[in-house]
Image (tube, rainbow, N blue to C red; front, side, top):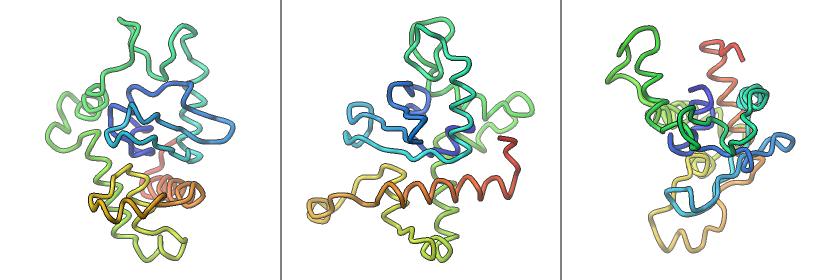
Amino acid sequence: MYLQILCVNRPFNTASAKWSDIDLENKIWTIPANQMKTKSSHTIPLSSYALKILKEQHMFKIIDSPFVFPAINTNGHLHRDTISKAIRNLGGKNKYSGIATSHGFRATFRTICSKSKAELLNLGISEETIESVLAHKELNAVKRSYERDKATIEQKAKLMQWYGDYLNSIEPLGI
C-alpha cells in the first residue's frame, strides 16, 4: 500500500512491479511501454521512503519470481485489486469501503500538489512535472507533437521526495 501511495502509479503497475525494472542503486523504477496505459515507458524516481520499502521487500525476494509482489498461489503477481482490498480493510473489515481506493491515491497526490502549487513552483516543479509523474498523456495532439519530455528526472525526483516528506509530516510513515 505504501509503495502505491508514494509512487502514485496505476494500481496494476504497482502490483505487477518487476525487479528487473527497478534500479535500487540509481533510485529509479522504469515501467516498460507495453505495461503502461499510455503505451510510453514511464520512469519513476524513488523517494527515500519508496526506496526503503523496496530494499526491505528485496530481502524477502522469492528467487524464482521476477515480481516484487509475487502471488503465493500462482507464478504471477498480486492482483491489482489486492491493494484496494487492503486499504478497504485497514482497521476493520470494509472500514474504508467506498472511502479510499488504490487508484484514488493518484487523485490525492494531484490534489496535494495543486494545493501546494506555490511551494512546488519555488522548488522548480511545474504542472508538467506533476502530470509527468502521473504518466498522463497530453490530449492535444499538436502540443504533444512538440513536447518531447514534460520534466527532467531531477525535477521528478525532487517532487517525489517532497511528496514523501509531505506525507510523513502529516502522518509519520514509520519508514
